[in-house]
Amino acid sequence: MFVMAETAPQTEPPKLVIENGVPTNSSLADLLEWFLNYDERTSRIRHPHSNELFLWKQSDDEGNGVGTFPFENAEARFAIGAIQAVSENNSEPILKLWISDVLAALHESRELKTEMSEAFGLDKKDIEASPLVKAELLPSNNERRMYLTSCWLETLYTAEARFLGYVYQELYGRPFAAS
Image 1 (cartoon, rainbow, N blue to C red):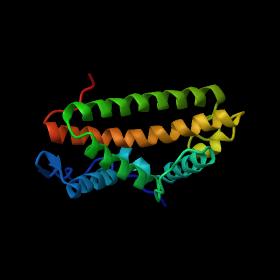
Image 2 (image 1 turned 120 degrees about the vertical axis):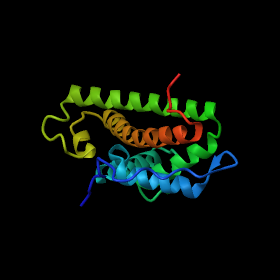
Image 3 (image 1 turned 45 degrees about the vertical axis):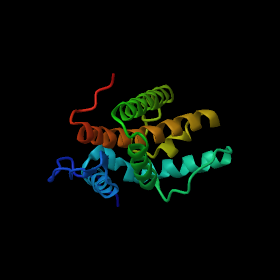
Image 4 (image 1 turned 120 degrees about the horizontal axis):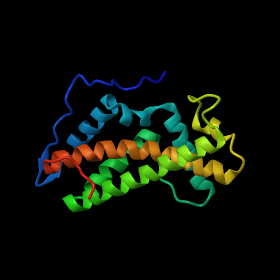
């Protein structure tokens, strides 16, 4: 049974250990684990529906000739991608740009998902139904692919934006603010 993370954390996030201007991998991993355990929006990546979406996306990409990486589950995809994003975007302007891009993609994904849900009444029968079940109500394969991709990206980018925004604040001493 899936249990959502606590909504009111009992502990503070662990501090990043920064050596030579770079956070250590172990402190990033500890912080990421804290977000998965205590941040409700980040913890959604562990929800069975999120993993269903991840597995669907992997299969869809493979079926359409898009290269995939053999991640075990949605959580592993998020964790490795988030740590890699911090590593590769290793200056304030570059990390700021990356987070801005993540937020823009999150906005587009959420907007498309909402538009499709409303246009096709996907939430009318059972708002708690899996996105894969809801997608069955869509009239074409292209619409199903668009809807499911937007659901997956909304989940992934929400978790990534939450985590990276906090890392940005820890690294640069101020909250992230889009330009």
